[in-house]
Image (tube, rainbow, N blue to C red; front, side, top):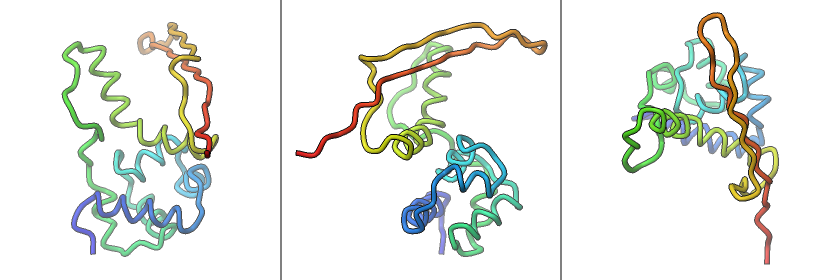
Length: 149
């Protein structure tokens, strides 16, 4: 029935819409954060076998989905060339892997629209950590809904 991870991802997306499930509820069932669970359901992370069985049950998938859900995916979902600068490349990598999940979560929370990059705030800071300081980035953009006409 499934010949690729993309087939399983498509089945999950269809079932989620059909069943009216939201990512936070799915994450609670899986036992992970909504951000990670959304990424995994969209084909960007590896489920444990138990998590995969939960996902199969939630979305009424065929058992043939199990090995695909547990396989290491090809991460990143954007076409085109990556930036050469190492720091910029990591931002590209983050957006490639987590971007589709962020899009889903923003639409689920706010509806159909965009996050403004014009009415936008960003703060970069340092977070002390015994294992090595961490970069902390806070991004806030005004939500702009698409309007029917």
